[in-house]
Length: 95
Image (cartoon, rainbow, N blue to C red; front, side):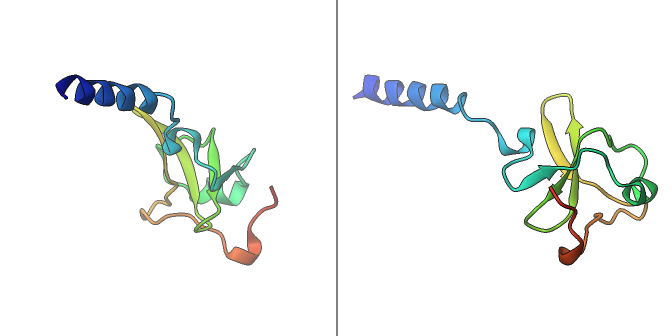
């Protein structure tokens, strides 16, 4: 019985390595912007990497790729006041 538990635990751990974390790829609910619109660049707070900005289809807000010391994930793109930068639903840029 103890060996079965160890085997199941090892299987779960090994299979979890096959799954790509959603944050690292941006997830299927985001789409790449290509180039960031100039008006978004103008209001984005400094210190955010604008080389890989995506639009979150779920809420219409921009996210940028953050490469931390441990992981890479997408964080909300914020303006100088700390608020997320979003587009109106009817103004979403074409893919």
